[in-house]
Length: 250
Image (cartoon, rainbow, N blue to C red; front, side):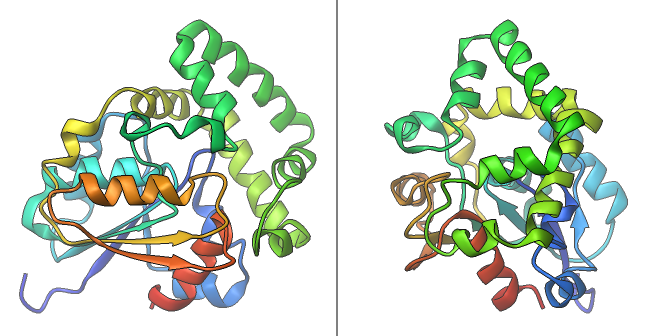
């Protein structure tokens, strides 16, 4: 891999899409234009094989945001030494590492997925109908109780439009893939953490109520090689992603 360029593979949140990279403005969108945004669906061996085929040469940096952290961590061992670093931003760790649901804004989705396929499918169908007819209103509602620096994003029409696009992508265009990966997330995937041998770094907002700081600390403790954890005072979920992209996307 000597002399080959470092390629960045981006695993978006759920609901999420490539629009996450455009929602913070043209400067960050330009910096991330070369990111490969991985299509998902909960089948991580298939995802790894697809990435190896599409990006056959060069070292890889995996960036996992929010629920994308699961995909980054479960794909990395399958890609082996090609992965030279894993960056996790506001990472969602296995639920079984602690008692987290009470403090997570997305808890109703995870509880429905834990309750079984029928309950989860029913909730997702309702969400899909809202995303179809009023995506920006749905996005604004998700950000209504934003904390820390996420409050400024909640008031930014450009960010809300990007979030609305992500909701439509996950809940309408890729609903089955979205549901499959959420089901994989709520299952116990702690054993996969022991297989991660590549260097990991974590960026975590102190005010995050989507993936709380205690979850990032539990994840760091569970990995074979304890990663560097950068806690960002005053930042929450999406503002931590913005900070990471400003600092590390080049």
